[in-house]
Length: 194
Image (cartoon, rainbow, N blue to C red; front, side, top):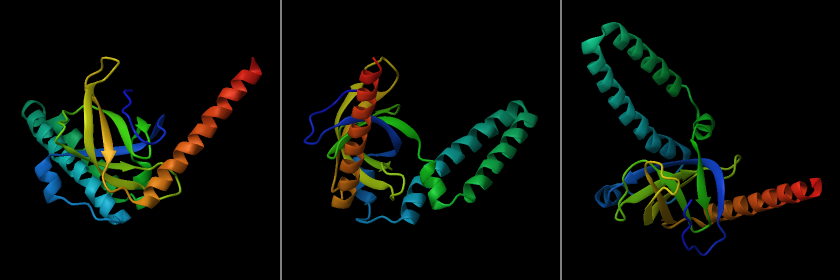
């Protein structure tokens, strides 16, 4: 993963991380609250699920033109998934944040994305570095966009946090320090086994 110059120690780690890409206009229309509660976070990221649901329904209607049996089966499965999503509480929802490889620091993050991202875009990031703490929702500036180094589709984007709350920065720094200690212990254990 490509690393950008940042003023904090950075580390490659797999952690819960979700994002929304916003154009400059969307970002100016959709301001994040300074202290988002779990209900706000849930509703904000559930919008992505609503958009996905619309796309699924559109595809099912196209499939229905060829096979009504298949379309009926897909509609039933989609209804079942929607029902299950409605029964998820906040703790379960934050556990459902997808795990992804990130290059993390206290000042920014780099992630691989499949979507096209422009330098003028803003990224709303939802990350959960500590399992027993609330997730962090922060808007980010795009610092750089580069092809993924292994040749995969998509880009690696380097992001800088906008107005990250000091408590959230402490969570990130604590998480990074804990991972550094964990990696050092693993390395020492490997050396002792030799």
